[in-house]
Length: 211
Ligand code: NAD
Image (cartoon, rainbow, N blue to C red; front, side, top):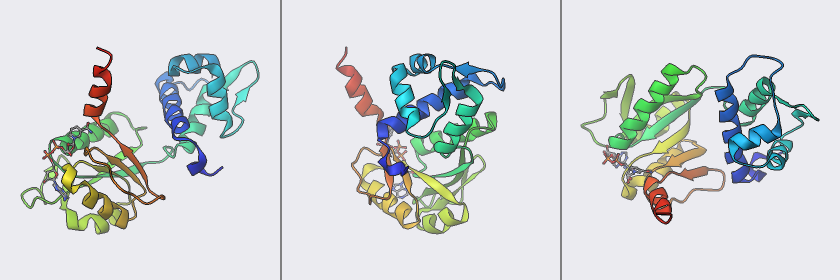
């Protein structure tokens, strides 16, 4: 099945299922989980779980459920996190630095954490050549070269909104296919590039409605 045809909501739920299985942290070969229990933990119905997983294959046994370890391995493979993924950040200010440190710590604490911080980029000459812990900060002009050199597959954009499209275009020119944008601006990307937007202030506005 072509991955692009899978609805984004299904991919989002798959990531939730995988996190639940990872948190179960079991090597027991006979540990099973029912679609009901997996659905309860994920906040969706059992039928939804079965329907989502059936898009990718036959993983369960009628009346028994899913073998936890096996399903975890399958979901890791489907979600491409059965191998390390090198990540870059453009914009090493408050947020970029915090995200770099967070991901470095996660990788150090959890060997199974797939996202490896590989390189940082900033156009402020006072920052280039410096480091955030072990990570060197390169200039923005070096994005294309360093993405190839460090085999960066995923880019996080943490520059001001006015610079976000430029940073995105540079990433795409370098061959990046997956971008997580934190700048509060709508970016334009070609169809082969997957763009996700992270926006805490939008979520706060969303929550404020319920006060
Ligand atoms: P900051 O000013 O501390 O850092 C921005 C960095 O980007 C600076 O180091 C600057 O030199 C660099 N930069 C500017 N133009 C650049 C370019 N063309 N190429 C490379 N680097 C460039 O800002 P911050 O507080 O870290 O915020 C960064 C972005 O994240 C902003 O757009 C902000 O609105 C956004 N933000 C989003 C969330 C969220 O929830 N998604 C939360 C906080 C901040």
